[in-house]
Length: 305
Length: 335
Image (tube, each protein chain N blue to C red):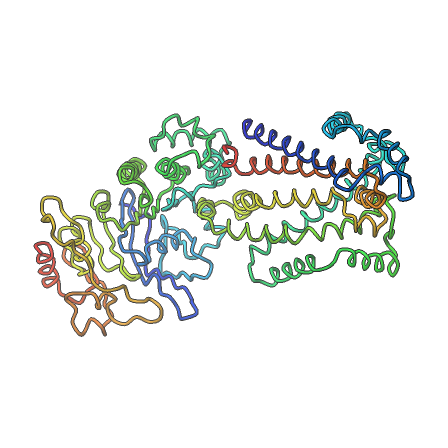
């Protein structure tokens, strides 16, 4: 297990390094950064002055090393638009996104896994059909439309929930439902498929032959093996949510990182975009690492690999 | 001798779209304390379903009926699922064919051994652990205590089947059902596992129902033999009677398929039984073996054949008289 963890960690660090190179080079792929900052009406001299001021005229590798060196210390420079340190800016937005993603993931798991289990226990029954319908709707409904419908319904027609903002926990209910519902179908279908496969396994028959209680057979012997693929997918979904759902955060006026990313791209606020890409990617790296460890804990056969 | 298992007219019917499949058709047998009954037959003759029916582990759509189904005098036919679960793994345990897939990959050997005992007996985890170590040593596993923390994928097939046997013994059952426990194993391991099973059965005075298609195994470990064909028992008797004087043409055919070292000539044809097993869907008239039987006559296709008793207690399902059957047995032995 220790060797396995070490290998995964090295892999994660390599991925993180690659991402840092990519997100740094974005600045230059998008065109001349000096010209972008100077604006359309700037003269060549002004652009040249900005180039030397920001250090864009120096070798790229040197700029990269400086950037990484500062980034490791938590310094991503100043936002061109807000004029404040990027780190401070992102940190102020993260709690909103974390709350939303965490609650949406919890919502998706609490809804998806039990529904998948029940659907697998009674395949092709009415319960299975209902679960399938919910899944299809979840995948087919555009989330902005679903969000607007919820706002109309519970924000205005039956005004029991605040339609926008992020001041209290009530503000997070509707965004959680919309974002979580979007992730539910894949988790549910995976759980169902996994359960169906596992329930016909020989070791389930062995467990029943031991006279174990049905709940022991189901939760101890079946579910643990069935959720192994679900964990990996849930990690990716969670990464997606942490990246901030731009649509959801915009519709509900939640000022999280997704909304910030959208604003910064529009304003060509390069330091902020760079930092956000790095942060989002690192979320994925960390989540993949955690889900690898989780899978190894669930399935001892992985630990030797 | 005390009866452990009594089965009378056990039937297993499986409704299919094309009709009802009569997989097990009115079979009756019994097992005494310390006795090994071998159920022999080819694939699809209903022998595995018979064992699953006894355990109450049939697929949900299969229907089990029996005039009598008792374990140690207790009627299993009237028990509900919860009461049946109380008996499974406690009074009656099963060993399966596939040791590679019959253990849960996610839990340690120790965990899977202990759980049956923790479920059925009032013991603490430590006592269950002690019992697991004791039984792992009994089934010939070295360094038993350290094995408890291992996972199934760390063990070979032979070791896993030993673990399965130890698992079946955890609660000290009266009856063990073993469904082709050695089929998936190497030949050298097969013999070891069989000896082990036979020794343990003697030591713990259990009843053992051993399901197999391997007559070599039967000759070595059985006390009594039931030969199954097309969902029925076609012959039943002591192992000596069955091998020395097989009365049913199917048994005679089966025995002819085994080469005997020193007796069967090199290059000689091995016996085989021509023809196919009849479909068991719908009603079956007459003797199920008639279409493959070298001694069949017109009545065989129209008359339902009952088991008849030969002198010595051997029972066989055939229209031929004892004299005619014995004559055929002698000819089969010299052929």
